[in-house]
Image (cartoon, rainbow, N blue to C red; front, side, top):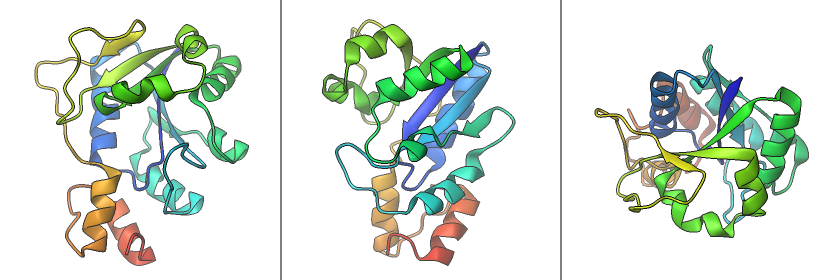
Amino acid sequence: MKIGILGGSFDPPHIGHYLAVKQILEIRKDIEKILLVPAFQHQWKPIQASVEDRLSMLSSLVDEKIEISDIELQRKGVSYTVDTVRQIKNKTKADIFWIVGSDILSEFHRWEKTEELLSLTAFLVFPRDPFHLPKALPKGFEVVREKNLITTNISSTLIRKRVKEERSIHYLVPEKVELYIKKCKLYT
């Protein structure tokens, strides 16, 4: 079995997350499902929405091949990717593909236990505008490629900023996420 994992704050989840996972499932037929793994606490930056709010919003991305794993939420505090991969691998016995945006490549050296992590998982790099891919990727990293790949520069930071400025986020997030943000008055 092969599983893709997209970790993140999902504060909030947006259409860029959705486009990445859906296209990976289309392109990589060998990956049976993708787990969305929300962080309880980000290692380097604060999370604004509560765990409950983020899970409610994230549920709008779930379908027959996309699931939410609360593994890091159960752990509480800061979780490290190596621990999450190890735990999911032990539970599922699957081959793991950790999905990252190309913007993460420049900070991979800051991650915990990178050598062990690279022995446990392969990395799928999804191109993200305007972050260009280096000519040579580190060992264990593979770019998601397809002629008509849809990439974006949408980020959770951009969404939060637009909400705070009372600007539209229509089409930047799934409709259910937009309605949830408005109803709960998140990010104002």
